[in-house]
Length: 91
Image: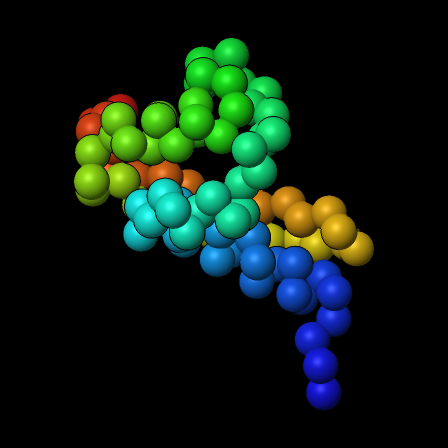
């Protein structure tokens, strides 16, 4: 039995996040993030280089954990959390 397109797309996205955020394998991550990647956050420099530069600037203790992933056709939405990037919990 083969995986559905949605299941395959979820696996690709989770592999991409693991590769960039947890393994920090930038060469391998290039196959997931296009050179034409558009960064929509005003707090991160433009493009793939901006995203990769941000991750490089954060402590090696940074970790990403996904909580929920939803896919419909070629659209994948991930909800997760980052930890270990130097901020202390409030409260």
